[in-house]
Image (cartoon, rainbow, N blue to C red):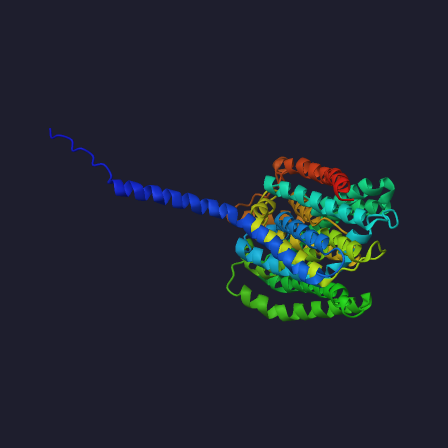
Length: 501
């Protein structure tokens, strides 16, 4: 037997180069981890400079600049935690990529905040604390600072833990807790709080009902039809027309309403005409897409891609209009108190809305992907048809709330819509006669048997399409967020009053 050849040791130079490579890789990984916080900090600094251009030379300039940076921090947290609801369903259904969804949401969030964000921001700024109860501008300023800081920190922690919570709960609780710390229980408009709280109960139920209704329509008119492609060519343009009309009416009433007075009947007419035009224009587009598609459910994914993208864009616009108030409402109150003292009405200037819209979009781009995956895949399985129903339901509910100036939680609505879709699927699977006949015929063809198709009711009853475990965690989060924000804001406000007032 020959002797084993000794293993040659690696040259010292190779070992040293490997060490350098390891160090470089570690440095790259650390740089990636620091890139997002560094970008966020840079944005806050740029916002402070941007705000300084508007308030330098005016009363309370330093306070306003600091509040603008804090509002930017709050806006980024809203984007990181809340905007996931806008595209989570579409990404979870694989109708769009994560990158495309993030870019789409970012653009429409800014547009919604700037064009139609004033109505709900006024509610946050003026509608929660009683006028006349806080007579000192300094007390009001630091109360709103405490509300912003407490809400932002709470949302930041929730995002870090990977838990979607209501950013609207957070800021309303923050304003309420800071108001109580400033002037006692009588400082809060409890009637407004009761109305907002009722909307948090009503809105997820409404979102669930609307989503289930749309899914019922899709199943009855498209999915369980003998010729699915022909049915889709007929009804998908109608669905897009409904969505486009709602978006146009919303823009006319809230967006153009900032420039010219648009009445509800005129906005309704705009919605009707735009919806009819979109329906007519999309008929040939959908027909071209349907060419050559097989008559099966998988083919419907292609035809629902356009409406799902449009619904995600609409939802992002509506969310920007509604939830920008969570960052900008307190900022507007601070700016008003610093420059004009205590006043009954707070004006929302454009530069504040720009800060809120850009902050929400940046927060989504930096920290959103983690929760997008969670919302899109954890509760129930989504395909493009179900995701479309969730997105359209959430958008319509948020639009109505923004129209009447009522802060609602898009998290509540979106989650309610997802649960509505899941529970409706369970009910429909067990009770739909159309589905039963469709499956009987299909089974008869596939199995080539003369025996009748029978449902196994026991098996269907055991088949759950919604994860029940999420109920407890979601309900707990909804119940805890507001009191936690109020308590934290009261503590921070008390400390700020001792230091600065």
